[in-house]
Length: 359
Image (cartoon, rainbow, N blue to C red; front, top):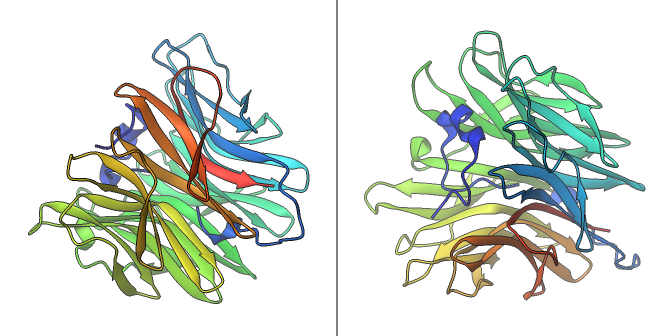
């Protein structure tokens, strides 16, 4: 059932084919019960009806365009993540340029700040804060056509891989002075890739049972424990299983009877661990699902396809972001607050919601 839409970016991410792609970690948790909820921000992209997607975010259901809705050339742009720092709203993603290249970008209060010059392909998939600084992770292709995993801090680039083999970053988490980045790197020039995370530049291979048939998109660090979530594909079962690791110890969330993936993020709240994603039902429909301490809760309507892509905890409330097809062809972003669904955008048309931040 993945991907949710046709997106040109995948031709550059051929080594990292995943049933689903999506982005959150505990870096975004806000458990301050004294701060009242005022605003809900959702980053993603909307469809303009001309076979183009444009980057935007929604504040309390009101859409704010980040890239032109009708750019005047064959184009796509997406916003993958969103955070608030003080009163400033940051989002990150990519824009497809008139020259035919993907360009990594972050937007501050709607103004584009380009992380790359557009001469080669690049994208930023995840945001976090470095104290008072903002940073993002993604990739940039070098002159030889190799993708380099990298992150940016206040616009300054830091290479995580050396450009020998293709690599990419999916997520980033900062705790104290430690920087954790999660991604994939190929093992040979034309070979399979494996999931890894790097702590302050030192790589750690995710201990997958089936490392060449697995993908992990989210990392969270809480009390020095490292959580990673995604899916592993067991060839003997022919189906992917939702899974997460805590300090290299595996927890299978599904048994392989149905296709599943835990690619919607990780939320850690005290002793509780929420893993977000989807699982198919007996009818073959993907159903937006989260697991709290291993116990499953299905949020989708089980009639049309749905999936969780992101989440946020504020006080005692859990927000699960994702999409729901209102009919077989109309994909629309929704969030579930404590299990109750709300459309991200009150207008019509297709849209896709990737990241949520609750102020």
